[in-house]
Length: 236
Image (cartoon, rainbow, N blue to C red):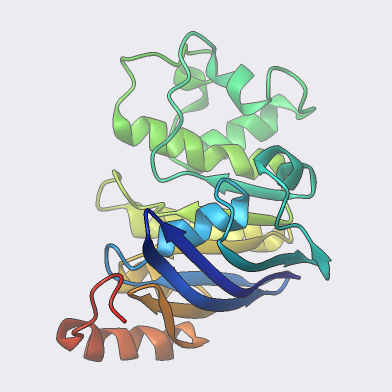
C-alpha cells in the first residue's frame, strides 16, 4: 500500500499543498482530479520522489520512503509516465523501452505495448527517437514504457494531454491492461470523463483534498461544484 500522510509543500514562501492524505491500495485504479493549478502534478512528483515535501510522509507498505529519490523508488516498483515526455535523442525506440537491453522482454511484448498505444511495431520499434517525432508520438511512447516495466504502482500524469480524440479509449485500454497485470494506477487529470474510468478518485482544489470516494460520485461532485468554486491555488 502506498500512502501520503499529512503532506505539505511550499515553494518560494508559497504553500502549494495543505495536509494532503491519500491511500492507494494494490490492484485498484485511482484518479487525482482537479482544475489546472490545483496541485495535482505536485502530488505526482512527490509520490515519485522528484520533489520532497515540506512536511509529512510518503509510506510504502508502512515504510517511510520520503527521503528516497526517483531511482530508489523505481527499484521499489513505482513508475511514472510524465506529462511532458523526456526528450531523449539518438537512441532507437526498442532500446528506450528496454532500458538499453537491461529489461529482458520478448519482441512480441514490445509489439503488443506499441500497438496498444497506437504505434505500429514495424514502423516504430527500430526507429530513432529524434526531433521528427511529434508530441503525440512521444506521449504514446511514454505510455508504452510502463507496460513493459510492470511496476507495482504507475503514476500517469495527464495521460490524455497531447493526444487526439481517441485518448479516452486508449486510457480505458491502458487501465484494463494494468489491472490485469496487478499494477495500481494513479491517474492525474482535470477531465471528468477520464477520471470516471478509474475505481476511486480524489478531488483536489487549491492544494487541499476536497472530496474522495468512488469515481462516479466524485466526478458528479466535481461537475456540480468546480465551476462555482471560489478557491484559487494558495488561498487560505
